[in-house]
Length: 110
Length: 127
Image 1 (cartoon, each protein chain N blue to C red):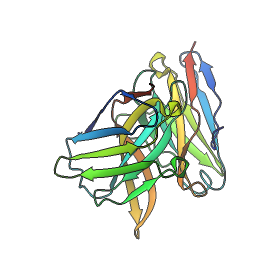
Image 2: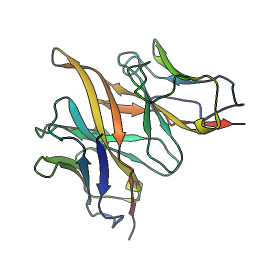
Image 3: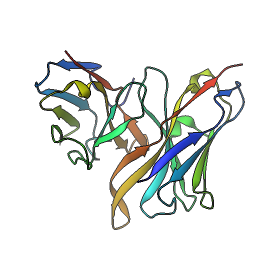
Image 4: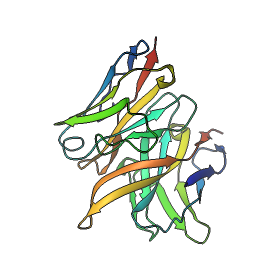
């Protein structure tokens, strides 16, 4: 069982807003920034959000991140078919002295 | 644009040592404020951080892998490596090499992230 938890799946129709929650604890998300990665099945993960809410160059503005307490969230506004992927959240954990990740959330565009 | 490429055997026998190399192109492995990390991902599961190495040779490993992991850097070849000893079927996974970028303040890492990722290489542990 992951130290950081995410729902296994989420879905929406094109144009909808989808939100994914990432629940941690005081030793990880509560003390450090959360990052989000997008992984299209069969390919390597790609950095989507870093430092809780920052977007790397090239990441569309419909992706946004936030953090409150020991939880982080990823929102996809204006869902598009190419957004079908698995989304992973991760943060450093002071207790485990290691990076920890959620199990990933598979987003399906209906 | 920095690119990473993993290489190594795709099949390793149980109890033997898994060895992978990551070639870095488009940038120097000796650049400040970048660590070089390894991840793995068993089929259908999440990401597991294995550890990281700095160009100076400084390392940090995931305690869950105990004393089985060793990482090293070869600046002359602009590459870094992973060794995992005493492998079992539970070590079967896609292995990724990744660059870890960071922001520091007063020598303390305040933010860090993983980008870019190599394409990954599947390693199967089986006799």
